[in-house]
Image 1: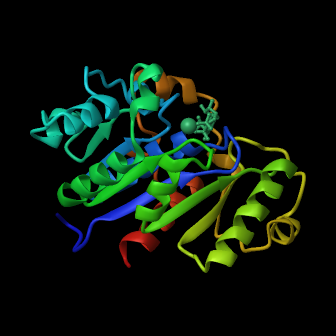
Image 2 (image 1 turned 180 degrees about the vertical axis):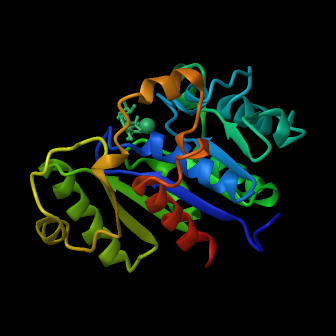
Length: 248
Ligand SMILES: Nc1ncnc2c1ncn2[C@@H]1O[C@H](COP(=O)(O)OP(=O)(O)OP(=O)(O)O)[C@@H](O)[C@H]1O
Ligand SMILES: [Mg+2]
């Protein structure tokens, strides 16, 4: 391991479609170019997209892993992850959504602890719902990244989350305004900060919008592993986020 201590990073949101999964894939690209062993855990259990977006196929996923853990068939975590390159592995969401409700949340905790022993970074993609599985991932995380867009409902829900964190005295989260998918400017940054009741820590600029994104998704490619991917303004913001996390 290149880091003294493994980090768990959870990417989440308070509304669907704010760019979480794309960000997870691009953050993994940045971690890989820093030669940090990274496992992406797709906790968007009902509709995970990570394995498919990276063109990774395998019969195993989080459900088969949990099932084997429960039935004492588990041997090696490598049997369940899929390899993208020398630095990025993926633990995929269940292929069959009908198996999701058989996953008991405590097993997610067990899986995250095991992955921490093997990787520098455990990078978790989630859905935007606050359920038992996501709460376990939040609790286990060194940092939680909230991706928000310039949208009133999104900002209102973020305000609620900020109040909850304040009540609980929790501050290991960052707010990232993603302007690369919702390019409308309903509010300026000052108004957004007032609406959500806290600082916006990072802004992914409009220029990170990629009209050829489907070519990346269909080709299983990662923008930030491309020649120019990290030098774009958006790539630089994602690099800053990673640098802040790994220097701690
Ligand atoms: N930089 C970008 N440029 C162009 N399109 C993008 C970019 N980032 C994300 N998108 C597109 O925006 C949509 C939503 O992105 P994504 O799936 O990453 O969001 P999400 O928050 O994971 O969504 P969900 O809540 O459904 O899991 C997708 O169609 C994705 O391809
Ligand atoms: Mg997603």
